[in-house]
Length: 367
Ligand SMILES: [Mg+2]
Image (cartoon, rainbow, N blue to C red; front, side, top):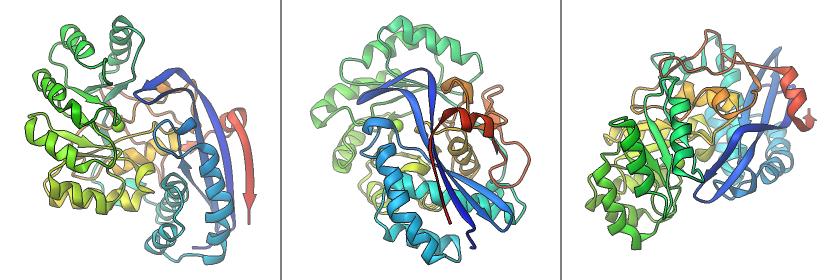
């Protein structure tokens, strides 16, 4: 894998509305684009941490530092020969999975372009259309929550996901069920509850949810197993599902019945596909989650979500649902609740250079 040049660009895109979950709020989205030039081709990956440790301890600054000071200097020396070697190298750097995903996904794009195939085909997917679900954050009032869901549901999203936290769970669910009837519905707690809340969480069974995502802390697989044993509603792991070993353990313990696969959280497509494969073998369906990423990262999740065990709608939504603009062309669009990946090779979405210039914070080139 010859590398002629690596360009890192940190972009910051304003959101259309602030996004609040159980552990924080953001109004801008940071992304670090990783462009690799090789033999006349240019491929792109995205490292997509949330500002201020919003989802994990990784921040745009810490991920930038991992890339600039650890991964890229070693990568330019090492020159891995295959995606497998690249992954073994990245694993050995002990860096943030977001930073590793930025580099790793760029190499997948490059490999797909070399083979003149769309990325989804290189990954082993069988279709170029993916069902999309609407995800909304925590709002200051129930009426604002309902208005947001109504506004976005016009695009035909296949399900609704609301964020919950202690004090904001039963009431919003009653309101959403009251307003939208039997719409496919799920909740995401982003680790906001503890084992002391098991009795309370059991009450959520009444809402016939598709799943409850990550109710308990990241490291509490046993607690999730205790909760799952007492609940009808499937538990889906997100934050806990950080690597293959942990997912294997979660399956063994019966901590969940569904797994959310995030390319950023697991350090790239290779690991994401491996988790898909092991869940498939265990009869555990998966779906593709997001940070949300900007367009390059979002598109990568779409490609991965064409694999056969991605059963539930992805969290990847229309570019305009989250961002005032995006760094790809065409934008990701949802029609009748589905996203069609355009024809092409590699990522299939091109970079919008003008917008990258507008939203750029900093850039650095390595040879
Ligand atoms: Mg989640």
